[in-house]
Image (cartoon, rainbow, N blue to C red; front, side, top):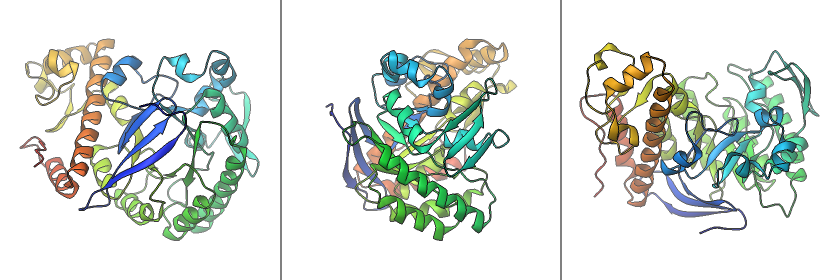
Length: 383
């Protein structure tokens, strides 16, 4: 089913947790939630073809406004038919506004009420992006889901600094909402900031949700804060968000964190972890994490994961994958990425099935138990 406009349907709530099943409808296809979005920052999920990403089970990918604005430029992409045509991806695309990338360029940017003045990391040229321009750029790209420009705060940060930053993000959210064309098919999500302070997060939710965005994201997490603190913010903030809108946790992507945060009611995730780890030889399986360069795999004829149905696991041994990685062959990155993406897509498939069957608490407990021991592989046999 294809829809000409964006909408979200909440289909089911798990009786044993806050986990939810939903469906996002966009002009480029539908997305089942909870969902993990592979990251294609510069218009490509590194090392793999777009067709493969779809075959591995991905329904939506993420690209980045900051990078595509600098190279090749949103106007060029627009003239060439939009980002979907440019990168040959027919499914939905969410674009991050670039706030996190600008945050990471702390020595190259200045932030004020108007927007962000920064120097390009490519050629040092001076650039400026306002909240209005961030929306304009994403509309030119043809994004299905756009994100407001926000200020991502570091950790640690004082309450006063976090409050000042929240004021700025809320101001930008109001301007972004006003800048979005009313008849445009693109969805626009607001971003909740507030650092590690529950009172600021609560205020962020109250003042952002009253603006009437199409979905809401928790931003400014996974920036160095302790894991326990991240989980406390997610647990305390997620129930405050509207039930009838998607809830997106930005940049959090370890498998155990996804399982925990779905338990708290999060619907959408993105992270570079599966693809970056693949290129660096760290592979996820239902038994353990495999560092493929380790000598123990030099004559191991078994697949990465005997329970995985991906192309890599069906055709290649650990010994061969280690050989490719140690030889710095490009094929190592390709095969490793195929496996890690498929691992994540299969994990989300199991998550959705557990919610559908009303068994998510048991699924979560069994998964987290398996993460603490490699004696037994994680196998979910629903009743």
